[in-house]
Amino acid sequence: MVSKKVLVIGAGAAGMMAAGTAAQLGAKVTLLEKNPRVGRKVMITGKGRCNVTNHCDVPTFIANVPVNGRFLYSAASHFPPEDVMAFFESLGVPLKTERGNRVFPVSDKAVDIVDALRAFVLDSGVTIINETAKALILENGEAVGVKGEKENYYADSVIVACGGKSYPLTGSTGDGYLFAKQAGHTIVPLKPSLVPLESSDTDCKSMQGLSLKNVSLKIIDNNSNKEIYSDFGEMLFTHFGISGPMVLSASSHIREMPPNRYRAVIDLKPALTEEQLDKRLQKEFQQNANRDVSNAFSKLLPRKIIIPVLKRWGVPFDKKCNVITREERHALCNLLKGFTIPLNGFRPIEEAIITSGGVNTAELNPKTMESKLISGLYFAGEVIDCDAYTGGFNLQIAWCTGRLAGENAAYL
Image 1 (cartoon, rainbow, N blue to C red):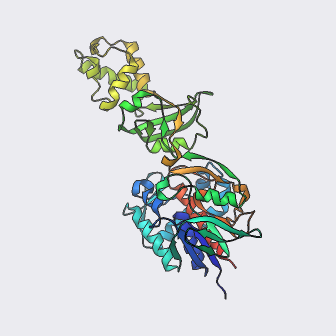
Image 2 (cartoon, one colour):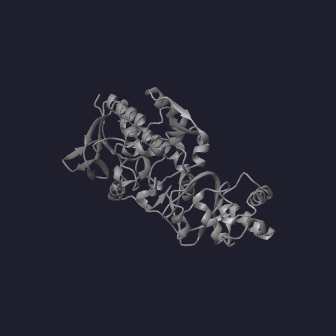
Image 3 (cartoon, rainbow, N blue to C red):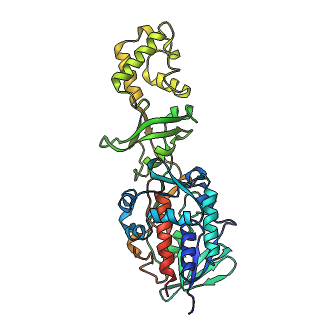
């Protein structure tokens, strides 16, 4: 039997999954990767630990993909998170499940996932070529190959899996969108997702490097005064605004960011009710009765946020604790339970973990990942207009779309 020739562009999560899958089904697979090493972006996911997937069922996974989640139903049902976990464990990578059902390698090393994928690809018989794809070769409404920097490569089907535009140093420079446009596809406008947020508030810069743990965060739409996101966990102040796990997640709930449309509201003491916090403040002020109020916060707040809190409170720094009024104390309670940061933009797409936007899902077959416009052309991973919240859901998109594209591209 003649083997089908499959070309895969991009040796990231989706590309390696697609290439290895197609090769296991008997296809003769060539994987083009412009970086000297495969899996560059996988190496930095989960802060270098690699949040492989989320240990959840398919409906939960779909619910965590706010952009075109339903499009992924076939792919996710065909290769759900539990099968992804079994796949990596079969490759010799033991996994563990942490808070929020996030799945990591037991070693906490992303390199173990990359090494396992590379071995899977090579053991399946894939040929990896260090090459930059420049354009698709299209003939009579079919994808028949790829023009490379060094030479042309011909195949029976082509899988585009070269990522989005986030983290361009890993090779995600938006090439996949150019290939899709060349094939006549519509590209949904790109925007950063899972990205830090900018603020014009100078307090952020003065608190640069301060990491807050066990705080709650709300994002409020100033137009409607409605809460669009809330979470509990960690966040970080930076020279440009705010970042950290909760902030990255919050960013994917904001579709557009005109200046002053949104504000972040931080509860610095979420474990205490207002009454409990008021009692705590009374206690601190009693213990520091004859001291300046500016010296009474060392046990209450991290050092870097004390001055911003005092400035916003408006009470003179040298006012003695024993003359703080009930009204001033209540105002401080409100401030600590609702420390507000105005938001005025996303950080650049180059700093985003995920690119939102991409190849229009209406132009792809959700059961195969094949283009509806060009036969033999498939898409997988971040190049497609699907993106999810943090917690392993975006890598799950890569695994399941890569698997489906690889299987279908390999069929004679």
